[in-house]
Image 1 (cartoon, rainbow, N blue to C red):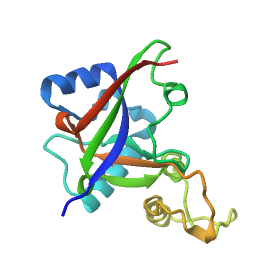
Image 2: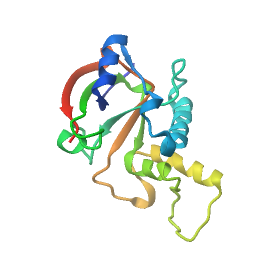
Image 3: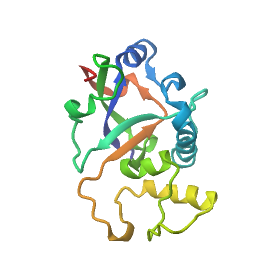
Length: 181
């Protein structure tokens, strides 16, 4: 039996409007800071292929959503999350979606930043150690331990992100409009 997962995705209004027309929202490379993040996003895409299957034709990058923010399974507070979505006044949409869980890959939001910054997630932590590129990239798979069980770490404010290849219009249960602050 397939389970349904409740997620929240923050998108630009234009992306949402395009989804309304086409029936599907997919990541657009033009809106990804590829100068900084392309290698990390491509690594995540490879992990998604291994863990949830191949993307639809011509899809390269994942769509991002929230599963949990700071230890709570609740809708993101747009007073906080409405920032950094473009220039002040940029229209954004918070989508509440229900998606089959086999189409979603969950990962730790904080440790994802080690991947973005080309760091390692190796335990026990040894700041003096030098790791090979292969060891470092293998360590990135620790982001998928969303219980944060490394070295008995206590993480009461765990934030968990979700990636998927696309969001289908029929998965959207609610769309709320906001402006970037």
